[in-house]
Image (cartoon, rainbow, N blue to C red; front, side):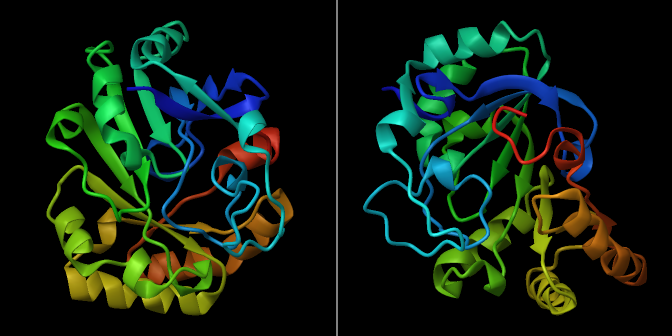
Length: 244
């Protein structure tokens, strides 16, 4: 079974070493692997090249589609693991797209990386397989709020939110575009018994000016409600670029 990865250039898998730019592991040196395909479609998604291929009519604010052949590559789990190991890091961030759509092949890959601490970025709608789950030390669960443009029944399945709320490895990272989004976070937290110290609020944006502007009003809301503030450090350092 092959893994379907995103590319950072045609024919070049998006596997790279950098620092984690978001959430509780911000600033840590890590290896990244970005998987292709997603079961949701956020209108502001900054990695639409991993899922919005020609013929995909799901909404996105840029209204751009991507050539599948240039933006996807299939690798064996063994080859993917070899490339990751060659980066010389001891922590791996698996992201997407929605990586848990390929949990079976990812479990095969991780069997070749037994000493790697594994962190997963997920939208929280897909239950990981047991073979994959045993390798994970941290899930960064990012439920998509109403402003993402996804139907609530798809983006916020109640059974899955309850499942993640009871997993001590899971933290919750919400993308925030307006102050009202924080009220939506609060309602979800109360309904699913998610304690404030497990919640990170991250401004939506792909440039430093937008991020800083939103952080000015978001940071006092975090102080008021006991949430953590997540920046997007990689945007400040490298811009909105693949492979960073």
